[in-house]
Every structure is written in C-alpha cells, then in structure tokens.
Image (cartoon, rainbow, N blue to C red; front, side, top):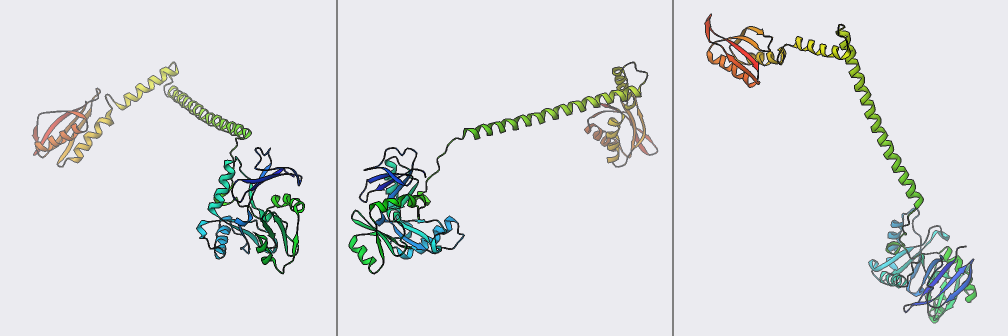
Length: 364
C-alpha cells in the first residue's frame, strides 16, 4: 500500500497535526505539518463541523457536470446559504443502496483551507471531512470523541457536533463507541477509498506538466521522417519531370531526323526542320499571323470587300480592297492598324462604280 500523510487542519486556523501511514499502520506523527512528504500521498483532513453531508439518490449515467448540478439543486433545499456561495462535491457512484455522498461547504471556507495548505507548500491529493474517517457502523452509528466534538457516522448520515447535541441526535439509536486505536485502524481504508473528496470543480487538483523525454524523442523522429519523406517526394517529382523533358527533347530530335533524312546529325536535322517550318509559315511573322487581322478588318467593315491578295517572301501582304466610298477604305485601314500592323495605302481609283485601293500591310 502506498504511504499516505494525513494533514489535520485546525478549526481556528493552522494545523492540528499530521500522521503518516505505511501499510495501514501509523509510522510517524507530529504537531503542525511535515515539511516533506517523501513522495507519499497527501490527504488533507478538514473539520467535520464545517461540512454538511447528505446521501442522495442521483440518476445513474450522469456526467460529472450534470451530477454536480443535480446535487446542487437537491442540496439547496437543505441549506440556508445561497447555492451560489456553496462548494458542492459528490462522492463516487456505486455506493450502497445506490446513494451518493454529497458534501456542502462554504466556498469561502474551502478557499481558505486551500490557501492555508498552499502557504505551507502542500498540494493535497484529496481533501476529506474528518467525519468520513470513521468506519460505517454495521447497525446504527459509529461515534468517536475527538477533542471537543463528537464525530458520528451512520449508513447514510455523518456529522460532527458537541457531545450534548450529539446525545440528543443519537437518542434511541444504536451507537458503537470507538477509541483512538480503532479510529486510527480505519484511516488507511478511509483515505484509500474515500466516500467523498472535496477537491472537485474549482478546487480540483491541476495536473502537473512533465516532459516525457522518450515521447519528445519519438515526436522529433517522426517529424524528421515526415520532412525526409516530403523532400524525397519533391526530389522524385523533379527527377520525373526532368526525365520526361529529356525524353520529349529526344523524341523531337528523332522526329526531326526522320523528317529530314539528308541531315548529317540530330542538331543539323533540328535546325533544318526549324528552317522548313519557317519556310512553310512564310516570311516575317507568317502568313496566318498577318492575314488574320486583315480578313477581320474587311469583315467588320460594311460595304468593303477584298478583290485580290498576295503574300510576299519578305513577309508583307498586298491586298486590294474595294468599297463604296473612300471613307469605307479608311475604316478598313484603321482597323488593320489597330491590330498592330503597319499599312501603306495606294492611290484610289474607280472601277465599276466602286472605289479601289491597293494596300501594303507589314508587321510593325
């Protein structure tokens, strides 16, 4: 069994004392509080008369937040203090008779207890009311006189009160008195499986962050592998594109050599193929590139038509345009120039009732 140190908080402030349990036996004790826990679990024991305990029948399957809300609503009927000023804690499910222990304590008092422990350098694993340290009586109540108060616990009741008041509450009920040895003998079980731990909600223990060096190394290795894999994918893509480009270039050279078998080498064949393509395309910017804007200009101009067309080896285009008026021919010239070509207009002449002009179109 893990060693545990019980820290008893005083009712008027400070600490009443501490007790260290190992293997269920008290091995050390003292006044105040221990300055070092030596790795033992710490259970803070708070005054029982400051905590009101109830056993409630809460619906099964509730989430912790839902169970806390249901307990707060049920407990509001038993407390004169506004529910917003109360700290409500719920014991684990699965208790006897399906009931769960619910503890009510002023949030201010709970905060003062936690501040007192923090000032002493203590961060307890659990906070338990002293009344829940008593063993549950098999029949009736278990009673233990601790200091000026009587601690009493039954099957579904637990309270701390002055002896005279405790006598009145327990009148007519079976009571089993226990001494200090019997009380101490049940402490290990009480803190190992507490019926209620007040460290919940706002006062829950925050997990301490610890760096797992093994996990960090694994994550670093994983990140490195991802980076290497990403780089390998990029390199593979670059190599694939490079090989594909080389293959296309080789194929182009092969086609050029096949098209021009008289060439003495692949480089010469490629150059000859380029010259042949230029020859087929025509001089300058090529027939298609210069003729298309001219055709479009004539098409878009009303009452204009092309009478003759000649493409010269130097890349110029001679076109004969006839129209109804000189203004129409000027409109054709403007559209051709707007397409980025230079136009030299010839002398207008008449023929067949139409105006005729020979235009020389060149690239700019």
